[in-house]
Every structure is written in structure tokens, then in C-alpha cells.
Length: 415
Image 1 (spheres, rainbow, N blue to C red):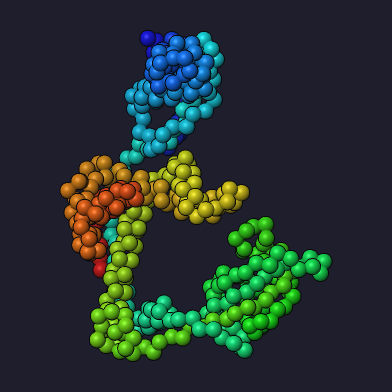
Image 2 (image 1 turned 30 degrees about the vertical axis):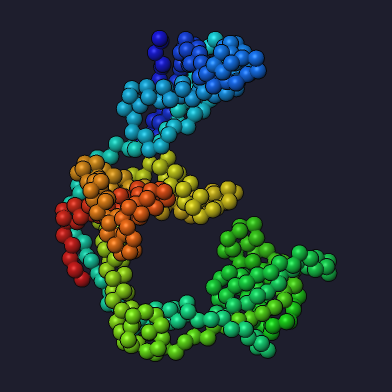
């Protein structure tokens, strides 16, 4: 059987293109194998299963056989390309410029994203400062007030204009040539940014049951670019206002929040939790600073294809409309570049130092998590596996090992 020909036509850090040529004999053999598969499966009138002539099967399932043939040819070509070029792909390749005519070679291009061949000359000898700010009384008070707000019921308010932090129920309709149409109900808390400032200002001048005709303007930084600076004529009706009644901050409230005998005990627990968060934040800053120093010392570059890949993932996660992708990419490019450089550094250390999480470490971590949640480890494992989150747990363990190694190579001073 003739060889499949693969030729690299373009390469840059993080990406490559390869031209593939598959000889007609290989194509014919793949078509025959696909036809046999459909011969065995086919149930055609007048023939027992598996006994229909190949010509009849090819005519009946022409598109399916062609698709199966192409799938096999692409898979075989990809194996050849990976072996020949010693590729380190980070995802399956994209197929472009497919040409397939009867009796001729099948040709197409692989476009593939690759892990760059990174060489880090310096991983240690850095000096870092770890600063853990003390938990302030104001922080504890703010957290306690947030807890009060979470548990406070919403009580209707009558005969009174709404205030910031009130929950309002409004009806907003558009006005065109004196006609009011398309009324839509909305509920939101004033001051949380759910409505544009002009709308909130009009609402706070109404009492429940009142309406007003107004012209409102969208801010210059509004999320939808097409509406920025635009004005709309609306009719606004305030239907209901609700306000939270916060519980007194006393021992009784502390007991409602859990196993606390007094407000002081609750304050102590909140202070301890905020302290732990401050520790985590300090550790995160040290890690970020360390990665940045490694990046600068080794002149690590974020390859454009990998940056574009990360930007695409961000856009999907934030459900950004396709028409806003260019603007979104411009705004988030520096963040994506930092993410790519960080991942490249960590992946290099994982491979060079063999620090990938082991099965035993993963099992031990799941056991710890299960004990905290009061559930069997096997049940948690199955749940994580079903949600496809086992990889996230393993990645977390791996990163802990990587940073433990990297920090051991540098000096961390406590501020």
C-alpha cells in the first residue's frame, strides 16, 4: 500500500499546518472496508442481513460510506503526521481545504495547536514577600451585616419612595409617537447596577402604584455597544417596593447562625474565617509573583494561537455574543496572555520534575473532601467522575506540588 504523504507547510510557536496527500489505492481500500461494515449492518428489502450486494449497499448508503471512509483516512493520516513530525498537540486538529475526486488522491490540510517547546533556564533564586494583612473590625462588621442581609425577609413598603437596597417590581414599556407598547416586568435591587442609572433615578422618585413617562439615556460604558449613549422614551410604573428588616446583631442572631452561644463567639468564628481567606490570598499573590518572575527571567512568550484559544474559552464561559468577540478579545487579551504564560511554566515544571498527581494522591484528596462533606468517598468519586471534574481535582493537586517545588527553590520572606 502506498504511503500517506505529510508535509509541514507552516509552523509558528503554538501552531502548525500540514498538507496531507492520500494515494487513490488507500482511498479505495478504506471505501471497501466502510462498505463491508454497512453490508453487515444493512437491512434492505429482498436481502437477508449481511447478504446485500456491495453495489446496492454503496448506492443506498453512499453519503454514510463516504463519511466513514473520510473519518478513517483522517485518523490514519493524523497518526502518520504525529509520528513523522513528533507533534505535541493540545487538541484535535482542524481539517481545511478538503479535495476528493473519484480516482484521484484525497488532499487536505491539518491545522493543529501545539504545545511550544519551552526551555526554562532559571526556576529558582528569586526573593518573594508574603504579606498577610490583619483582619480589621470593619471587615468583621461587614461580613456580619452580609449574613444579616442573607437571612432578612423582604417586607412590602407602602406610601413611601424606594431607597437604595430596596427590592422593586417595575413595569417598563416603550413609547413611540405617543403610543405605549411592549410592557415588560422587571425585579431588581436598587444600587446593584441591574438597571441603568437614569431608570433607577426615576424609580426613586415614585411611590408604589405611580407611573411616569421619561426619556432615559444608556451610559457610555453600557455592555451592549450599539446602545451606548442612545436615548429611549419609556413609560415606567412602580408596582411594588420591598425592604429588608435586618435582625438585631445580638446573641440570639448568633445562635440562629449555628452552634454559637454568643455574638462574641460568632465574631471570633468570622474573624478566623476571614483570617484563613487572607492567608489564601497571600499565598495566591506569592504564587502569582513567583510565576511572573520566572516568566520575566526566561522571557516566556505567549504564542498567539494559544492566546486565541483561551480568549475563545473566556468568551464562551461569559456567553459573549459573536458580534462582540473582537472587542472582548481586545479587552481580555492581556489576561489571556498571562494565563497562557502561567500554564506554559507550570506544565514545563510538571513534565521536567515529574510532579503530576498520582492515583494514590487523587484517592487521598477525594477521601479528605468526602469526610468534610460527610459522604462516602466512593459516592463523591462517582459524582465528580460524572460531572467530569476529576481532572480539576488532579490539576489542583499537581499545582500544589509544582508550587511546593518552585517555592523551595526561592526565598519567601514574611512581612
